[in-house]
Length: 221
Ligand code: 0O2
Image (cartoon, rainbow, N blue to C red; front, side, top):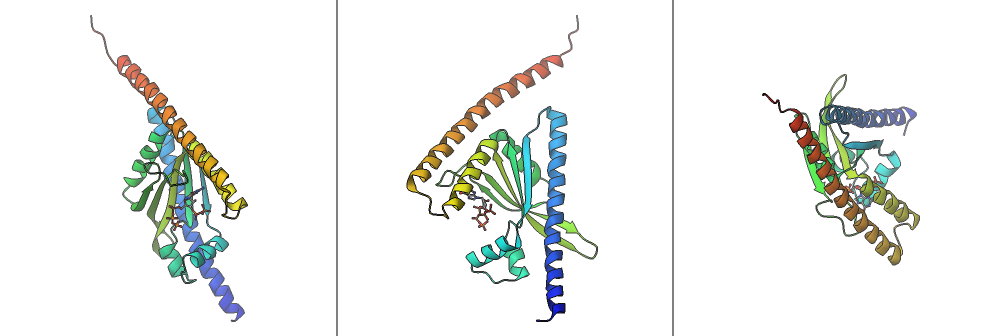
């Protein structure tokens, strides 16, 4: 293999990853717009925080190997759906579905997949709403449709998932049974807390709406 060939491959890969970076930028802008506008109209912010990342080349290669796929950009583009990933943490369960709906309704977004691990949690207790969305990215000489994975969850679900992820990697995927049991109990406790917070939130929101409606009534003597 010549130096020129290596240079060309490197350049092609950098261009390929740039496409995902632009898709992340676009999706982040969409989320920021929703957040800002929602805050203005409803006087509350449905998003606690967001975090986005591009999958590292090492993780991409690992995933290709795990799935038994060939090492090519075509198979990466077709088969790996989370090269560009955004995680949105919300305060309440209802916020998750509000954000998801607002994104899914946008005309330039194609919904490739929607996995609801809130409606039906994973056996280990994992909860989250996963969307695979495709958006157009316009570059100097071409237009590409690029996939972005959006994970939407509550702060409690996120807290649990980060601990579980750490434990999973610490024990190199052979987590002791007692820890798995405790993690499942923690997930159930987090789900219960989310439901309780949701009930309180709904009560406060309906009191707020009633107050606003009352203020709009004009009394004429
Ligand atoms: P990382 O390190 O976050 O990138 P896929 O493997 O993505 O093609 P799969 O497994 O059907 O297909 O996707 P799914 O179920 O939508 O899960 C994808 C991502 O969700 C994972 O990415 C994790 O980020 C998260 N996730 C799913 N299950 C769990 C879980 O049990 N615990 C935690 N902590 N996170 C989970 P990666 O690529 O596995 O990992």
